[in-house]
Length: 263
Image (cartoon, rainbow, N blue to C red; front, top):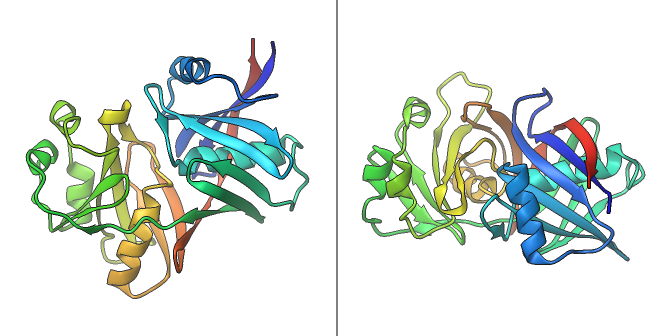
């Protein structure tokens, strides 16, 4: 067996930035245990597995530890690979059948726009140990379908957070999004970080699915539907968001780093 395998840096136009994802092109969808072993071997925050269907591709995402229901950067990486490697003709919409329904991607010059479901957060009660694990005082605490959302007072606080990942792992959610409005004069509207030790990813460099929460949150607060976010991890990455009723359009770029075969 020989299967095409790629490593792509997503939500960046520069190599060795953004969020790396592995993309594996399958002839058919293989069993869960094998998919998880491959993802563990890749040891990236996400490995995407694509298998062809009549009207698009079956797409599944795995961290080194578990399968997840929604992932933005590995979907962006998948669409990038399909166009760059000629699996799809330039300009043809990419269609992905996933655990979160049909997701699509389009090309806009050097950018790719993903069409994802919005995942708005609702106010949540205090989560024991969460503030202590983050070392911050939340200005707002919300809960989306998958994650907790923590707003803090300033961008400086977002950058300075050094979580206690052992304590954070006990939080009953896929992960925790920490966010603030960007500092005055910034080219971004908001900043964020994402922590997911419970799914095997202490800090995700750039998290597309978190922006399905951040888009409705900041759109309401800033009074605009089109915004730009910066995920302030060590690698960093830029995500354009457009809130479109119950959908979020996520814009990003991607760079292929490695191309090979899974033997």
